[in-house]
Length: 327
View: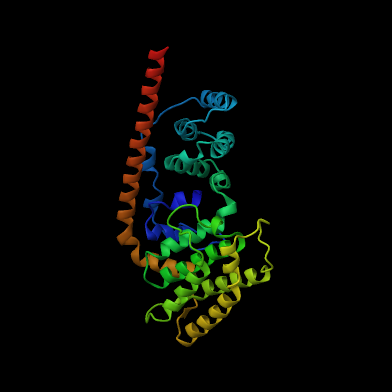
């Protein structure tokens, strides 16, 4: 879930810089210092709170089997001031994510949590507490696919191909139900087929090439699926009929991939550069044009977050006043 939330609202430039490699966290060094300037975030009005009191409140709330509000966990995270407090917050953030209110984890709370983790030397905790690993390939694949749809060039088609292939791997391993949770992914089988359709489309584009590295990744995905094509998935949960039918198409997909790769080679449609190198080149070309728009969008996002926070505070105040009158 975290991956999709963190990508929400980002420009194609930012998204590509974050997701160029599904095996590691992408580097932000291509972007200027304006992207990392904390001034916009730090100048927000501070809602000073006592962490001890908040922790006690959450403990009592959980003991009574009531859900902790998103406002309480947001206040707790926003008032962290040391590495030790970050360690303590990890426990409460974990409990919140596994509570009935988990869907109300606010975007600004995630943003604040990651900032505090980086500020106090807890980089390893930044995403670990938030992300669902059981979904990592699905989420990264979705991010690459969506980012790829924003670019009608070699970077876009390469990202689209890798993203669809990663989602297809999850589909054949765990079934379509492991893929579909919310839009924009559709509940229709055949993500590997859609990946191959990207390769087919590139064969018809005169100025588009696919990254050789991406093609190697897709070939490795197909090989791994072929090795495990014994009808057993990684969760030991029987696949449904539509998933079984899709699994039976794997030999066809493998043969189709080989045919399309041969066509790409014959048409000189394969770029020897990695996807990261392609993204770096694209970033250098478009950074100046995108930077101002990205920063303005971030400032607007922070303003929207602050407005939503004030609404929650006002609602809390009104609820307390109403409860006092009823006593």
